[in-house]
Amino acid sequence: MLKIALSGCCGRMGHVINDIVSGREGMEIVAGFDINTVQYADFPIFADPFEFTGECDVIIDFSNAASTERLLDYCEQHGTPVVICTTGHSAAQLDRIRAASAKIAVFRSGNMSLGINLMSELLKQSAAVLGDKYDVEIIEKHHNQKLDAPSGTALALADSMNDALGHVYEYKYDRSSERKKRDPHEIGISAVRGGSIVGEHEVIFAGLDEVIEFKHTAYSRSVFGKGAVEAAKFLAGKKAGFYDMQDVIRATMEQAD
Image 1 (cartoon, one colour):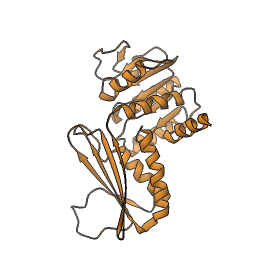
Image 2 (tube, helix red, strand yellow):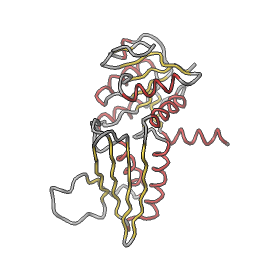
Image 3 (tube, one colour):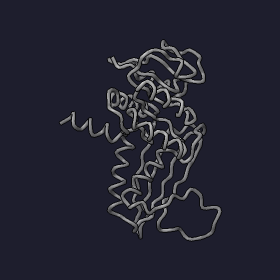
Image 4 (tube, helix red, strand yellow):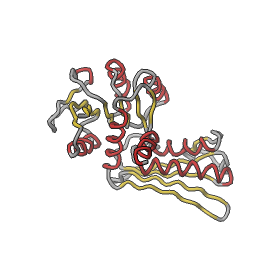
């Protein structure tokens, strides 16, 4: 039985993951961590992970970037693998996550959707072929309650293309403060916040006389929850290191063979 602790259990994604795990055999949620400790499920909820004295095989984190360091402290002390699904981390927080991977198994992905991660690979290949002959723009849309902008997914998509382009591109988030032509070595990233949009990411390669577009739309948060649960299954028992969704995809393909 895979024992899962769920950080951010009282949030929207916490409820989604609880529903997914409840419907699967061979796994259970044994504890939840959240500043809101109102009981809504059959597992105990703690305001601080250090209040939990039981055992778990892996932690899924869908909380808040501000809670990450405390959670990593707990995981390092107990040797517990952690799937970090939270976005909006600062550069210092990302360094802290990387540092933790020297002691424990850490999984982090800007987006837990299989479709988005496949799209990321396609964008990397496209950027390598199209090179600097095409301008690249990213438009991401999310609900009006999302705190960070641009989304972690938009940044991850930009990073995948920048990797293929030799890391010579800078990210442009706003053009209103200056009047000048577009720099050929920039990737534009625009954020839209409104209504109940779950998540939409569109990448545009704009060249001379043609435009190529890639688009992914999430219609339900369950796509992220399913990805997080698959990541937890993958990560449990892994040695210390840094893992992402590409590792899950490769493992799935190996099993299929």
